[in-house]
Length: 327
Figure (tube, rainbow, N blue to C red):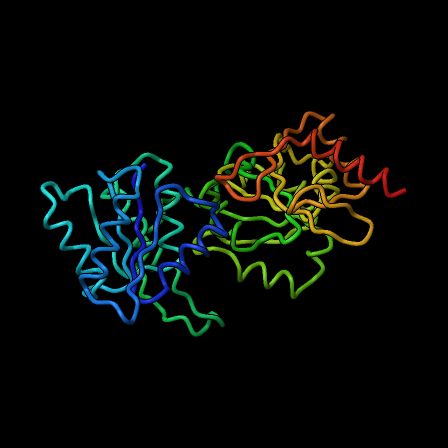
């Protein structure tokens, strides 16, 4: 896996590093180097050399710089020029958070830095959007090729594919829109909730929070069960988001064929007990999760993609003990 060095004027690189780890989890061999106001090119180069020496993999490094032609960029390019074989050290300028998240995702595929440049540059560009959407600059699109006679509106065989089904009280937020979307690679995000489907404001907020190129919809549980059986959605790779375990159970009992549930966040409220930093449960939650387990559903208890999974059976035992102790 190649190393990544974030470089910038001021604390931008440090801030992006912290923000990206909130979304994608702690990263190995990723460091940030900042050029402070009282430092010159030589000071920055020294810090850059120290950062490189701290990495486990110094053969393949991707530098993500804030600005083309600035001191951080220039000092990194000088190091590359001085390296005997610089082909495995590359710099991309115009760093933003979507670019950094995409570079994390690309590392897990085992690619070299030169093979991921196109993807991270494209993701950086797609991350620049305007709200309200009507103020987005309009790009001219090439004319679509003419459809062959008889090919339109043909149904797709098969059923919808679930690349991830997640329980998360916050539903669609940064960790889901970036980290989990990159990890699961869906072409559609579906929030399955009777409550949210009735709430126009929340539905609009979910649609607006969708990552570029992956639309987000909100549907009631009954509608999701109908979609699950509709062959027209056979090529859809969907990420399903549930607000509660109870909603997930209702969907499965209605015919949504989910084999595994990612349990990422269950917020605390009155009557619940905290079983870890992000999961709070009451008796109904415990009973529901046990029922799902007994139905053969597997659990992947993780907040972000590269964190270590926790054992659901142990969490349920802890939750039951805490609930019984409060009686």
